Length: 303
Ligand SMILES: *Cc1c(COP(=O)(O)O)cnc(C)c1O
Image (cartoon, rainbow, N blue to C red):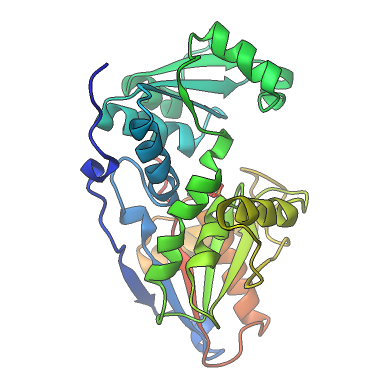
């Protein structure tokens, strides 16, 4: 097995840039809006995906693993980032993809990029995919994919090391903002971001999935990463627009307009819902005049 260079070989751009934007919907309320450009952190592992992977990559290398095994849907940014990290650092990568019907179709652009980065894709049906955290199911999957020796990264990349890898995101915002807001899938990024903030700063999560199940999961992630959950974060569940990757005409119009106004390419699955939520909250008067609110820009639209 060839030695893998340390994850610092990825050469991230840190700290990521912080930009002020001038937007009348915030100015009218005396609120300052900043964008934390985590999308600029690395060309192949944008935003929170770099932060969530970096300590896992260090751990995998330190323990002598040559292969990374992970899981995702057909459009997973996490799968893409893992495949890119494998290519750049010399890990073999195996991606377990939800949906066995996809095996017989041409790969979409996201999975084609994974494959081009050397990721071996293994398609499983939805019920098997749902049970992948079950030890017996995982063991069978590892046998079938010959990945018994692989380092396993969970779906969405959220484990204790991922959460710890996101605390510097909060630390980079110390002294710069009152509220740090981020869109949530698994909530791992919010869990780490909140832990990195200074006393008095607070974190706000906007779930993009429907269901309202995220609060206990984020508390659990903080417990696993830091021993106890924090109290400086909240979620606002009103802005999922119907669920994961769902949109509404209003959200699309909002995102198109935000791109025009501010020259920011707006990623539509997560970032659009975050910016829409913050604008609505500002217009509702949810932020006291004089508040600085930072939107974490976690990704870019696919090309
Ligand atoms: C993965 C992802 C998220 C969600 O991160 P979690 O840690 O799972 O909450 C947010 N934004 C973008 C662009 C992502 O790719």
